[in-house]
Length: 420
Ligand code: ATP
Ligand code: MG
Figure 1: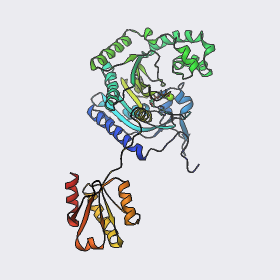
Figure 2: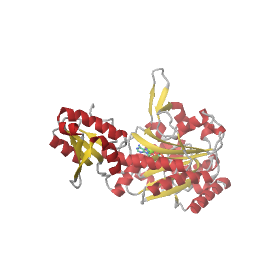
Figure 3: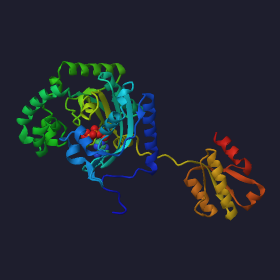
Figure 4: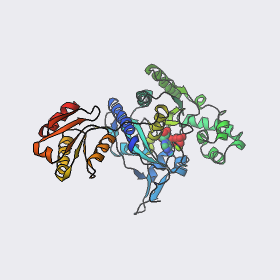
């Protein structure tokens, strides 16, 4: 208990960290480039916000939320997704008064009480984008292009963009009727949950992960056939813009996404390299959400991308990340005087931006050199009474074994010169 993290959570550290850092840096640089600003919203929100936005027939609300009462009996929920919090902030701070669109991104922990397996955790990390203030399919295309460009820059090959349109509530009503008829005549083959979903929200049946249900669903009517003129036009224009941007996609009428707030465009980036949990990124348009939450009627589009699944995909493709350790210099020491001096020299070097290490454990000189090798030090020196008295020390190139005498006073400049 004390030595094991809670089920569905994990520590990210060590060899994994450089990959996280480089992927996050790419995401931030890309967002800068696209004019998307970062927003950091709280880790928890009023439960009501998710009931209202995510939808109370969804798996997230019915089974997956970390909900608790705080000490003043307010119902609080740890964020199960990113859009609701950002939508709340957009309204709270009157961001709709600014020139639109408003373009925001976040990289944040997300919490869902799920059955854990590879690619499915209880705390995971989402990179998300939300764009508000336009009904044009150009905004859908812009959001999709962020994910497409990221995937391209990361060099991920085996991933596919699938798009669909869920239409507006009117198209949806028409489709629900057709879908209910279809499900009604296949009800015996469906799982128990789907039989309940069929009454309340038949669309959810299309999102079921049970193999038996999936087989039946494959023959369901297509929502695209139920789209009205305007929704159809929106979808056609989106495809035209994606084509003109050179972004490849396939239309998949079975994509419905696990959240109720989507209208018109929905999309997923799906990979073939990480098994069952293969949706790395999912998103869509949500034109009614801001109004539902008490703001003005506002067109909006966004996506959420699972960082852990992205890392699994990268690893599956590129193999384990195995970066060699590296330090510019190890300043070893002999005797008390040298030990104290080495700490000061290393601090001076670090202030000058040089990656320096000293012995802070009290190792023998021999053990210090072994350690210097382990941490990948490019250079080393050892400070003792003689070096301090003469003001000179021997700087050794750990690769070639070459050694030269240097003035201790000039060590910062010398290292700056060497490292360039
Ligand atoms: P799934 O169908 O796999 O359950 P979802 O439809 O619930 O996914 P979204 O709510 O759209 O997923 O979340 C966006 C992304 O967040 C997913 O595409 C996935 O990469 C990631 N994600 C969702 N749930 C988890 C989880 N429990 N653990 C790790 N990543 C997750
Ligand atoms: Mg899910």
